[in-house]
Length: 182
Image 1 (spheres, helix red, strand yellow):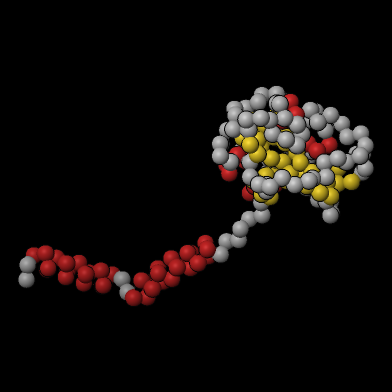
Image 2: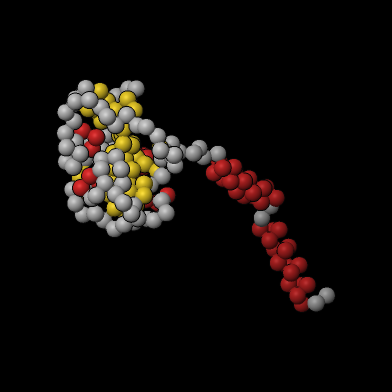
């Protein structure tokens, strides 16, 4: 028998003495359970912007306020520069930018009709920081482990450009129930 064969046989016998089938099967079981568990993680709820334009209930009657102001009713959970001050509007990205396909959501009270509306906050991506009308309102914000309701994240991650420019606040619809205060 050659030296290599002897060394391989001694190594294999030593490994067999130090470990058994049960420990090997336990390690394989833990590994496969981890793979199965990871594959069963549910898809987290995220509001995704549609590629097709749709009519949103943006025209709510009554005195709503100035869309270029942080105190505007739709900006109750916004964090960033207002697109209304950066060449766009409260609901449209400025030219040269595109809306991120993922958003964070909030529920804001419209003082004109005393109704709560679901607001989708989209980051407009593709240019550097706008730098005007910076707002940071955190009504209803959740910690980052509730990331789909946190406004401190750069949501341009799903866009063609990761450069953040400004944020818009689009009315998605009437809120079916008011969010609890925490």
